[in-house]
Amino acid sequence: MVLQPDRPDWWRDAAIYQVYPRSFADGNGDGTGDLAGIRARLPYLAELGFDAVWFNPWYPSPLKDGGYDVADYRSIDPVFGTLEEAEKLIAEALDLGIRTVVDIVPNHVSNEHPWFRAALAAPVGSPERELFHFAEGRGENGELPPNNWTSEFGGCPWTRIADGQWYLHLFATEQPDLNWAHPLVRQEHEEILRFWFDRGAAGVRIDSAGLLTKEPGLPSFELGVDTHPFVDRDDLHEIYRSWRAIADSYEQPRVLIGEIWVPDTERFARYLRPDELHTAFNFDFLARPWAAAELRASIDGTLAAHAPVGAPATWVLCNHDVTRTVTRYGRTDTRFQFSAKAFGTPTDRALGVRRARAAALLSLALPGSLYMYQGEELGLPEVEDLPLSTLQDPMHFRSGGTDPGRDGCRVPIPWSGEAPPYGFAPEGVEPWLPQPADWAALTVAAQTGDPDSMLELYREALRIRRERIGGEFGWLPADPEVLSFRRADGFGCLVNLGAEPVALPGGAALLLASGPLAEGGALPSDTAVWFEILDTRL
Ligand code: GLC
Image (tube, rainbow, N blue to C red; front, side, top):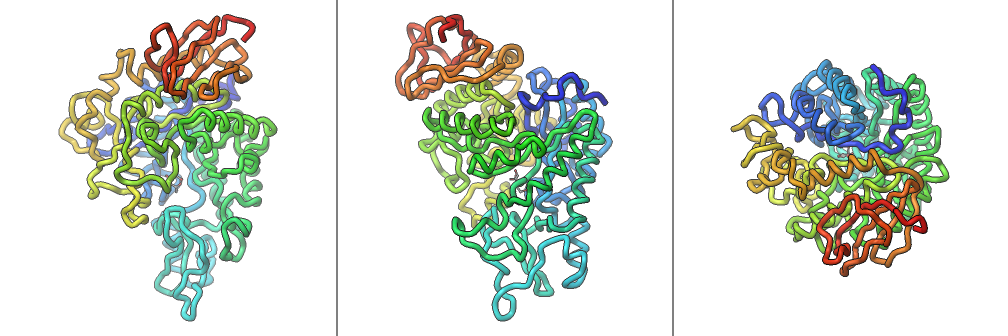
């Protein structure tokens, strides 16, 4: 299989599409997306102009956390298809010029994974239990959890089993954490990497990449006072160096992409040193409000942090864990924060769409790679009124029902037609999460060929990006409420986040606008334009 050896650095400026397999396209008519559905839709992704696809987990899983509870890392869940089909999918995608990025989940396994089943069946102190973090509880009879840590999903990250021991799970109860101090854990994951690289995967997205190692002894700690016992520990870097050596051992080196939520940009950039990961998701950019100073600070901070390690930045607006962009940008508070998500937070859809269109042009024009979550190209909103009985996300359940969870951004894609399932599944089949009744205008079919649609904006922007945009980034002079920058090749981008229209720079030839221009050609509020810089003084 040939991974276009002519472009070994493809990941430095790639546009990568994120597929959530359960919700992309249902090929076999059971209401859940699958590999057959994805294979049938590959031409859509190729034609849109994406360089690679990252697939959320497709492994056998009891689905206690949307597939991030993996029972077998070397196989495909039967609901999605077979390993053979995955191999075909990887090859077919490549024939269309699309590389595959597989999701690797090293921090934890499913409680149905053979290792954890064996650990539960084995006695206290057994080698089987050493692969996980089993510990005695505190209190007179061990009735209190071993330490004061909290789960990333809220609540206590410890569960007690019948013989009195507790096991650690930083996420849901069904996701026991692996003990990364154990050589077998390391060896196993190195083999899993090779398994997928040998099948043609061009890279891996590493889930919860900043959490793997834990402070020996698993001590209680005080946030902000003690060194964090499980976030961003120094001993993680050695693991990623060994992974990089594996990735580099391939004739066409494979790529490591980290999911790292570390706010300190200098600490974040350490993962991107030349012998560690290639890139990591830019959550700083994703979480910022729609405000010029905030976005400018994020862009400057990102570029400054990446430069010393020679790594490209990434630009991300959305993924399967966060609020859909058009919904978030239509709110009064446009930041993304897990803690601020709540039922009933109002949003102005039209405003959100306008801003999301401008944000698309902004992020596609910045230097580095871009990740776009499925459905963003259609401007899908967060579905905030899913019937409670259909919700599946452990974040919802572990919040005691106050957090809506992440199901609202995972609703199946509308492809065509006037009513659910909108071509996602065969007529009459109910998708695993219900789709809204008012999505007919958002389908791929409805938007195709409509020059004002989000889909055509993305299509055109991706085309121009591929053909036209490159080189060093530099700010152009602009009002505080305006972001204006150029790339070395004479390409310019201007985004108006202020209330008043702004004039386009003199000597600019318009390439693309995210919305209609005001009278006299000025750029209205919440609108972005791409332009050719004709005036050499700019
Ligand atoms: C990552 C995934 C998220 C999952 C969690 C636990 O943050 O993106 O969906 O719930 O890890 O695996």
